[in-house]
Amino acid sequence: MAIKIKTWLEQFFNTFSETASPQPTHIIEAHEALNNVAFAIATSDEINKTLPPLLNVVEAQLNQQFNGPEQCHVNVLFSSPSTSETFVHHPSDSTPSPEMLHSLHRYFTNGHNDLINDACYLDALVEHPFPDPLYGYKLTESNEMNIWLLITFPHKVPCANQVRWKCTAVETLLKKGFTAWAQQEKKISKAIASERAIHAAELHDSLAQVLGYLRIKSAKLDSLCQSNAYHELKPVTEDLAAYTHYAYRQTRELITSSRLSMKGDNLTQAILDSVSEFEQQSAIVFEYDNRLKKNITNPQQSMQLLYIVRECLNNIVRHSHASHARIVIKEALPSHIEIYVEDNGIGLDAKKARNDSFGLKIMHERAERIDATLIIQPHPNKGTQVILRLPIGDHHE
Image 1 (cartoon, rainbow, N blue to C red):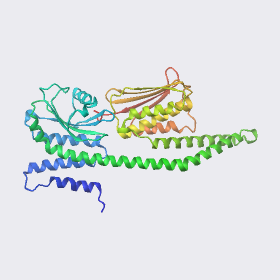
Image 2: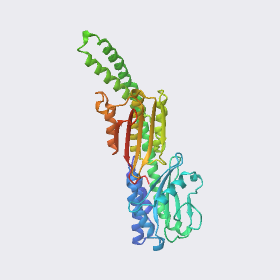
Image 3: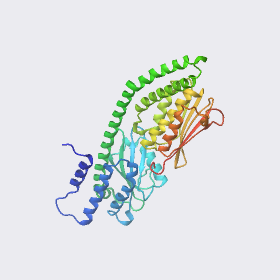
Image 4: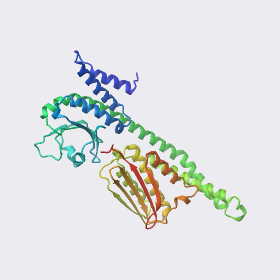
């Protein structure tokens, strides 16, 4: 008998909170609060937005266990072993110091994942790269992503055994929540990839072939109507050939895009793969300058940015007559990332685009979906420059 995932999760967490003997009211309330946190994590559709307010609750529950001088700060770190990238999520009411964020990124992206046990306690008396003593507990582990609960003590530091004992309930419930969330995310990603593959195959076997046939016939019709005898049909056949060719090209690009994948949502690697792909299709020399130290875009942002960059590369290869192109991706101040796509070709006047030039319009629409700004302008030296600015907020810290 089938059961909905949310119904199963409710039963799952409720059975965990049941006890054989009556408990004091404050303990029951604490368990209920942590149960709610774990359930919210397990059923989250956007973990970047869900997690910060939930960590407020976790931090408050933990600080009830420690004395005043031992008050702690809670963070959750997502670490990718395959891409060496980290995301640090913190409570919405507080933000770790820049020194702590830098230390966490450096420690968890320099090959330390294999050296750290499932739990670690770095005392203030031991040399380590963190400005505050740190207790860490690995909540989940996989080839794609490890998730850590990190607790720092800016003031008095409890002993390791005391910290572990007081954190056991929090660790157990968070582990259940993140394990369920990771499993659900994996199923969703697999289902999406499978559906996209099916759509790509259907496009290839049906619409792409029909459009390919129409492209050939419309081009032939346009060629036959070049004589003076059919001068009245010439504008119609030119439009028909141009629109059919564009529809065919866009369908082929959709098929390619449907097969795109970004391991661990690694935007920078996906752009590099696209640069290599388009470089093989032309004699243009491509230069890729990646200045991002870590991946700081969510999956939706990554895919839209990748589509825009690919459309830029496609335009360079097909229309620019350039010999050199440059792609730069960097962090501009703490709140934005910028992507530059430049070429030394004949240039492009976006205001005088052809009637069949839907590509520029689609690029602007994709940018709007993720609140990004897209600027297409002549390059200061020669050719065309595309600038894409994306606000990244606090979720990447």
